[in-house]
Amino acid sequence: MGRELCAESEYPAALLAVAAYRLPGADRAFPAEPLPSAEWDAVLAAARKHRMTGLLMAAIAAGAFAATGEQAESVKSAHARNQMRVLALERELLRVLDLLEGAGIESRLLKGAAVAHLDYPDPALRSFNDLDVLVRADDIERTVEVLGTAGFERTLAEPRPGFDRRFDKGMTLRPPAGYELDLHRTFVLGPWGRMVDLDAVWDSGQSFTVAGRQVLALSLPNRFMHACYHAALGDWPLRLGSLRDVAEMLRRLDRDSSAVLRLAASWGAEAVVAAAVADTVRLLGIKVPGPLARWAVAYVPSAREESWLALHTHAGKTFTAQAVATLKVLPWRDKPSYLRALVFPDAQYTADRHRSPLRRFTYALREVRKGTPVR
Image 1 (cartoon, rainbow, N blue to C red):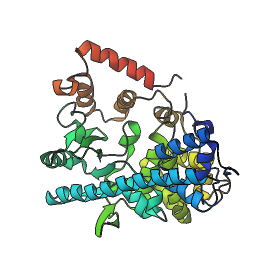
Image 2: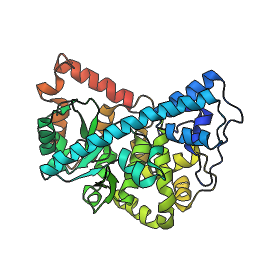
Image 3: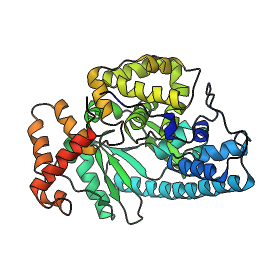
Image 4: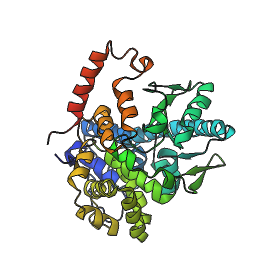
């Protein structure tokens, strides 16, 4: 069974127009009259969920989206709360970077702040609710130790020593302030995460300024690759804010689409890029696609690519199914250690989760079946 396409019906029609607001070639229509109260409440709730309050407010302020005064005030208030959180997170981000730099740990910022500042005409158009930081695989354990001294705690223990450094996507940490810091080694769990060229990701990067300080994100090509991974393999239904990230980067990358295609091919990730771009074009209603979008729409994935994409594109997807699928693409020398960590994890990993090894094994089987689409 191939990947499931995310239907337009998953979103309020008006929010699709918001997601496409001011994109070249997009033809999504805004409502001609203010929406009834119940419909407006659904749009505003979805805008918060999909990180679209900035674009919704901009569309209303410009007169493109018809709204009552009360509706305009409600989105203005929702966006102001989002921006207060963003400012607080950016202050926390500088604290995290101070800790890492003080320990000599190199990092790159992912998603949120990086995309908002580097890829949008106004950073306020792109909200975020947590922080995402990439570190080198060999620095994972030291990073957790350094952040741990500052009160950061893991949400889930490591299955076995060395698993984070060798196999996992990363982990989530929570500081006393209560937000989530996603610490990444690679872009995604599962076979696609193993395909990421972790050496190529660590090029010179691209800098931007937060509160007067220069910080480093991925370079534009690598940032686009990560945006595609996140858009195609992240949330389900697909998050419109992630598709908008892809669309914003396409504006610049279409000038030299061949370079992006070479990068995707070198990673073996053409299917991920094609899925993300094609979904962006389809759901945002871009009727005049550029060269990269035309390539994406025409791309035909292999059976293996379809099966890997399918692990991420349905309502019942599970991390367990994605983790088990990773076993197939590991080198033979790594398979025993990986399998042992999954089947016989340390007691700390299973504490308060499974009362016995048999219950854990039964749970894992259910999760694999649930998360693997039937062919």
